[in-house]
Length: 536
Image (cartoon, rainbow, N blue to C red; front, side, top):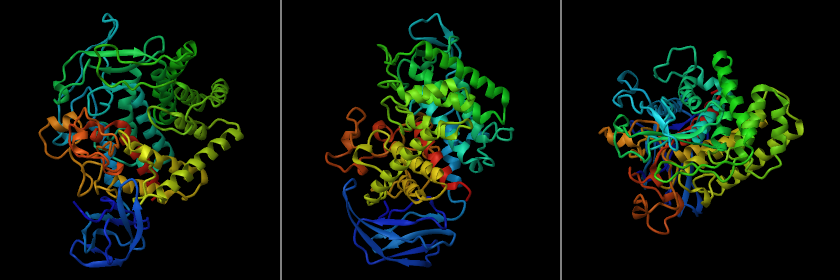
């Protein structure tokens, strides 16, 4: 392990560059790969950092801008290698986006595109409704949601939406990006081809009456086998208002994005969204999802469907301009739900983004209220980051299962604030959140496989374990530190009681409460990277 913590991928020449050590040192040098000293600097004593338990010293080398590969060295040791350059995040973005290809379901991953990470077609059997085995459907495609082989509408909708908004707001980052997927070379940008793989699956999850099934899984999670070896019966789990609302929202959003590329597909999406929304209107009360007896796959249950219905109404207005949807959105704004949340459990922030990006008129007072809320939250997050030795905009309560999700979603919020201000007020703090993910943290770990000299490599991900290949497929984002490691997966055996939140992590495949992957942990990283790469 390194004694000096840096962003192990690197920095843009003119970006803020901060190294961290946890013991007093006389100074530091930045050295090239030949050992030449290129820069000298001094450490600044930040003091004790409560969430890591470390006494933190920061070394600023922001004014060193010469492109190349380097390490930071001091008497305590050295950092991982990193790069300074104008394309420094291109490979990271490529890998984080390509991770979705590696999670494709229903098709074979061929050597031409997958390299050594090949497997045969998986989960191609006929699914049946859990409660009515006479109802059967063959539903192919989509992304495996996480370390298991389940496919779930609500997290899938959110992951796709975050990527689609990244494309909408920062199109220059993606327009020429080639992901080496089977669709590369088609008229669609590769990022939209990859999202279409998920959207096409989501469309198949809709019933004739407009309602949407919650998930498509086996009865229990598969053992740690390759996906094509998971041959248990597939089940469609019951329709509910949350899945149907998220379906309507993401299909409406996608219709806006795809319309200039593929109008028939955009029409198909908005037709499905309208059908789902009509079902929601006919079912105005919350219909929840709970795993029935005998089903042990992911629940993704929610307390209510308020933010989901809000997101759906806002996206429907943004896609159609029908004021009926706007009126419903305005009414729902008076209800109690988190306005800025961007995760699968609460999606109010995605509804705000729909209104902010709508080409149709929204009352100025509403837009101003949304802007004020985002600016206030960005200012709060910046203050939290400034009080953290490692510059993470994270409180103790953010270190939960999948803590890298709030870390990156906080970066999303601050990036949105910069868009609203037409400036770069928060860009430095957004950069710091990426730095934390990529190694400027209390363990000095890069939480993205294959990226960084000290990147984690053993995620709770079935094919990564079962393929027999030592190096994990690159681009998988770990859940990260969790102040409540689970005793059920053995995590609690590896984390001593009283361990500071930022250090509650271990790189072991069985520890799903610390080290699982999910599509909706990758997607906010895509958004944050796009914000930083925009117009470089």
